[in-house]
Length: 316
Length: 223
Image 1 (cartoon, chains in turn purple, green):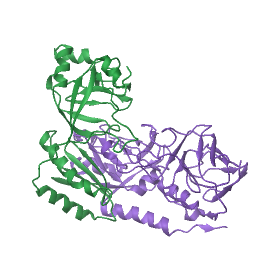
Image 2 (cartoon, rainbow over the protein chains, first blue to last red):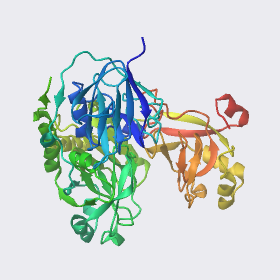
Image 3 (cartoon, chains in turn green, orange):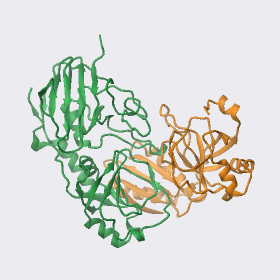
Image 4 (cartoon, chains in turn brown, yellow):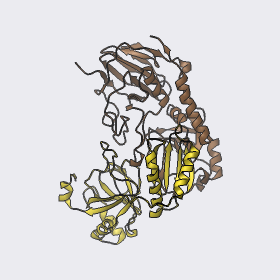
């Protein structure tokens, strides 16, 4: 019998295998990776009855077409996009039965940036350093560390009759460009007061030059940048860290960040706002608000608690 | 020691203000004292130069308790762990490492003198980052200090040995890079199939041993 799974017919601009992430290897210079919008990823797995860190696909902008080998159950969440099974529209945020040979097509996202496709039981690709998360820069994880291509095969398990869940729109994590909350830290105290004030007042736009390694912002350079600390000794860097390079335009590190950096950092985005940020399109205006670590941790905790407390509708 | 916030579940401890062995020794001592807590209260650590970044599980340890723990380590008077000594064979002036003549000319030395100076020191691993397994080694003899290239190369071969100011390093994987390339090491320095994937730890020492083309090939290097 042929192996069950998904055959990739069209891959879209950048579709990556991701799982919960690759933890504990900062000392070797390896970042955690994992889904850029973790909440949508968690939902895709939950709608398939999976472990929440099971291997799934992160689809940038849409354009993925896959064909089922064997009987599978999948769910697609994240950015709103047309979705069709054998040319008939089917809903996002719902568990879907794919018959053998069934063809699922993800259209172009109408808003947002990333979709997540989970399969019941999770994909079964080999782990590297404890994770299948793809890091293209280092060629780690996923399928030989690269984005999917037409002709690829993603092994999974056949699924018997399984419950079907649906998450109605009002229960989904919203796309939101509300101010990004940053826990003040790192070089915050060493930065000129004018720059710290300007950081909280400025409106930037997301640059099209952004990827999972980091996002650049464009706009007016921050006032006070002439007095930025010079010649810093390099130190650790984390996902969500907000660097202020000499040009005065912040750079926010993403899940595939470098583990060291030599630019001053004003703070670190709260995790739940980094997930939200990775759904915003280039050109979206963004603003910042500073807060304490204790308040920041409470925000992420609340976002995860909301996820746990939200029940999807059971349709079958 | 100065402890600062590095995120909702992260701290950074600064253990000195300069790049030197004494400060690095303190970083190593803190990293060693905290290592048993990895996978429990701590998710990960980044020791580098003069600081230690710590990511913790907020459900398993409170921020205040972690700060207390760091202050207690600060009071201990243990010597830093010795670290391991690695010997790396290097084919100086190999193809793909074109900057040896320029480094020599800038220093007013012969190429052989550059090789001798570069290979007669046991360097410290001050940090690992930039790319997986990329170890920042120091300090290079001041005569060999050479600024980074104004325009980084788009592709540096795996194993290339470079100098930037008073630091030296081996690129474990092909990548873009702006360091001055003086040689190549045939050994793999990042292998994701192994845990840990890199032989180096911060505080280890690294010594380079000059080899020729024959040994480079024999050790698995491909020019």
